[in-house]
Image (cartoon, rainbow, N blue to C red; front, side, top):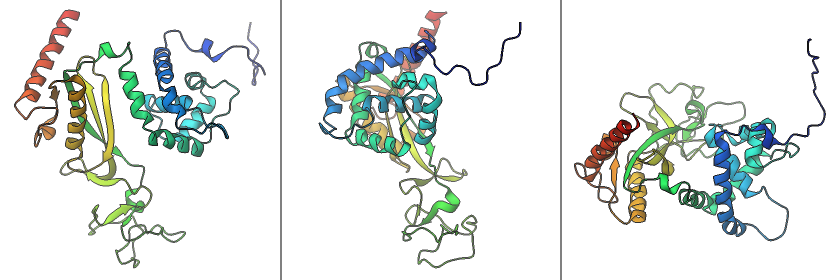
Length: 313
C-alpha cells in the first residue's frame, strides 16, 4: 500500500532531541567531557558577568557552539547561527530545545569577545587536557609542532589600500588601492601590474590585522594569518594552538613559546619533531638545538610508532 504524502507533517512532536542522536555518535562523548569542564569553569564564568541585568547568551552554550564551528568547519559565526536554527544535532549539543530561537550573529560575536577577554578559551583547554579521561592519552615527552597559513576573508584586489588612507573609497568606487598621497588613478583596484605592495606601506581596508604573506618562493602572496599547533606524539592529539599575524619568524617564535610551556609543565626537557624550516635558528627554550634532542626525538618517536604498529598487527 502506498503511503500518504503529507507535505507539512505533524504540527507537534513529542520526541526529545536526545532520542534523535544515535547512541554511538562521537559527539555524545565529547558533549559529556565538555559538560564536566563547564562545571569546573563555572566560578570563572560567573566573575565575567554582573549579578543583575538582562541575561546574556549562556557562556556554556556559546562555547559549545564554537566547538561545533571548529568540528564541522563552519566558516563564519553568521552561518553558524543559521545552521543552529535548523540543525537538530547542533541544538542538542549546544543545549537548545527545538522551540528556542537561535541567537543574533552580532550578539553572539559580542558575547564571544567577552569570553575571549576573560581568557576563558585558554582555561577551557587547560581543564579539558587535565580531565581524567583525557590526560592518560597524552604524552608529556614527545611532541610535533607545525604551522599553516589561514587565508583572511579580505579581497586582495579591492580591499588592500595604502596605510595612509584611513577612509573608505567613495560610494560606487572600487579603488581601494590608491597612491599614498590620496590621489586617484585610472585603475579599478584589480590591476596591480607594475605596482609594489608591501605590509609596511599597505593594509587591508576590510581586515587590517591580516598581512600579505607568501608561503614559498614562486607562490602568490595572500592576505593571511598563521595558525600554529603543538601535537603530542602518543595519539596525535593537539595540546596547544595559537593564531598570529603572518611573518617570517612567527612560526618559530610561537613554537618556542608553546614548547617552553610544555617543558615547564613536564618539569624536564622535551623532544620535538619539526620541519626543516623550523629547525633553522632554533634556540634553547623547551627544545634542543638542531641535531640534539629534537632530531633524536624524531627518531625515537618514529621507532615507537613502528613498535606500536607491529604490536597491533
